[in-house]
Image (tube, rainbow, N blue to C red; front, side, top):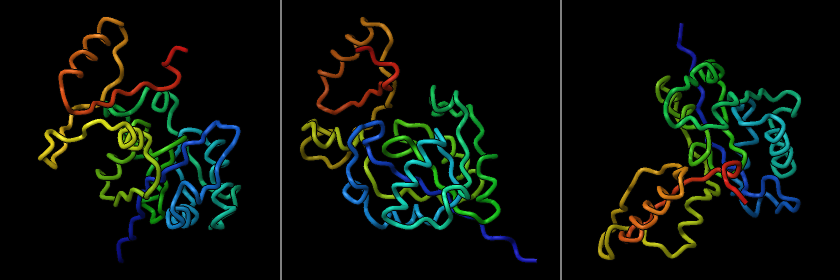
Length: 204
């Protein structure tokens, strides 16, 4: 008896216009190859099933889905994961990948941008590696990298070095004094730092 071939985990980017009144055509933000691959996936892991279906409906208008929306298998990450993050490694996402072990490709979807980069999903990618599944990131917008590229900040250790200085990305400190200390420390360095503040944590 031959062993069933495992499916792959695809990290599927989403446009950055989530929640916006005006939305640009998908083909203006995402390569057609990414949309075609996403259209062929019928099993999904996401933050919110309703917004995932809305995104799949937009994809279907460009690249026909392999299965109707009603037949798509969509699983949501637990609320505590997509609200508080899953980068600490405390959430076991392996049960969400049961379909991949049965041979189905699974798509991991964020509300906007690339999943597992400043958004939930890293636990799913880790689980896929643990299960021996191929993890395939698709080309698309990543808000952190787009902001860094447009900022003019230095992303290297020195002008003559092609090596990036990597410092741990972390949430913005809660207290004002801690934020001032981290900001002053960062100004003494020529490298760029990218603290993360989720929208629901920001005060307007």
